[in-house]
Amino acid sequence: MNDFTKPNNLTPDSVNLSQDAHLNSLLVSIVNEVKGYADRMIAQIRQLSDIGRALSGERNLNALLEMIVDQARSFANADAGTLYILEDNTLRFKIVQTQSLNIRMGGKSGDKIPFPPVELKESNVSAYVAMKGISVNIPDVYHSDLFDFTGPKKFDQTSGYRSQSMLVVPMRNHENDVIGVLQLLNAQNPKSGEVSPFSPDLEGLTESLASQAAVAITNVKLILDMEKLFEAFVEVMATAIDEKSPVTGGHIKRVANMTITMAEILNETKTGFFKDIKFTPEQLYELKIAAWMHDIGKVTTPVEIIEKGKKLQTIFDRVHYIEMRFRYLIEKLKNENLERKVSLLESGAPSDEVGKATEEGETKIQELEEIKAFVIKCNEPGEFLEDDKLNRLKEISEMTYKDENGEPVNFLTENELENLSIRKGSITEKERKIMQHHATVTLKMLNRIPFTKRLKNIPNFAGAHHEFVNGKGYPLGLKGNEIPFEGLMMAVTDIAEALTASDRPYKKAMPLSNVYRILRSMSEHQELDQKLVEFFIEEKVYERYKERYE
Image (cartoon, rainbow, N blue to C red):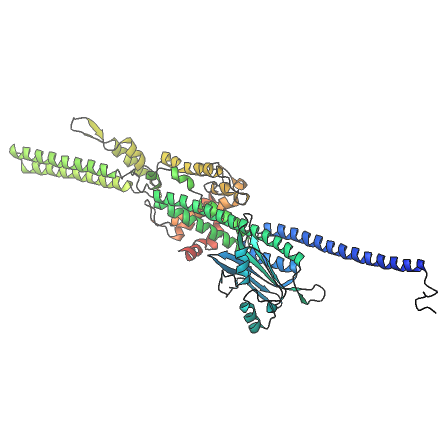
């Protein structure tokens, strides 16, 4: 029998069927493998897209950096990850994570990273990637002589870890500049958990993720820079007011700090009427900027009104004119008395007549001295000027003397009488309206600024700090619920600061007992919100503000 004779049970048709089955099986295997690969790629691309959306929505830089490493490790199924940022011609550690060792440093954790910055030398893999802008994928760092891996090996010795596969990719921003480096370590097989090299396909996708991360970092930094720029602008405006009037400049800062203190205490409150009032960090920031800008309109208020410490003060205190006027009248009266006495003596008048004339002259001089002292005292601002004093001022203003031409002149001019008759404080109603106009200007100026969505309420908050609950405030005459809560808060802190301030030229700082009395009186008259006033007093907002800021 021929050795090459086919077995009786094998026919050409059966051989062809066997080959077809094998080919079909191979084809199905290939198709399944391709499909599996495609599914994995689609899943990774979708995950990459989801990561991009998540990164673009984070505004806290530390949280963003931590999220980048978390997402990159999850995406690449890596055990460890490190993120470096290029600063001062070095790579600075920002995030260090090793899941198997439970290491999380940097980011929101607050744990400081003890490692020094990496010098930009090509012998270091992360520095090389930053300098060249190309990725490096190493299957096993212990079997590579491309770079100096002394650092990872030393870490392994002290921690018992085994650094193996490493993927290091540059982080390029929208301008194609490398701003940092993302380093992943020890890719793990999803099924077995064994460490394996990073696949070439994953390398490209990780580069894409790193670029998205770089753009997100750049955007957050840009936003932070814009916020710093805006805050600098606010401080410059406050400084301008400060240069114009140190009194107002100090007021702005103190009101801002006191308002934030009150908001933070409200956040801590767990019982009572305000237990549900909570401010997010973003809302606190918006409130802070509003408080810093609440008096920005005072740049247009005449400084002589802002700093009017005495009732007769303009650029200078006009009480000196009155003093000179009365000094002239007194000296004139003394001369007239002396001339009369000389005349009586020369005429041989009796001594009792001379004495009587002298006494009468001295009485008139004393009356003038008392009138002068009374007028000077009325120049001092106070809480209330009584009716009898107003009447006396009017009487004095109607008294006259003759000038050098023999023309009658009133002791006080109409303007002097108007200013001296101010019942409370040191400014007239006309000046008060000029002063109050700053709130209108503030609102007008702030409404011209294209605030971002995050800061859109600043004009409403800052512009409402002089509105009264009863609707008799200014500039819009808002009342009740028409006034934003933040405006009601600033109304309380604004008045509290004004009453406690020690740098006002027209008054001394009041003791807290008097301040609280006035605040409660204003709340009883529905000028200030009563519940906020009681909260301010009972929670010792002013005292706690002093402890924090002074």
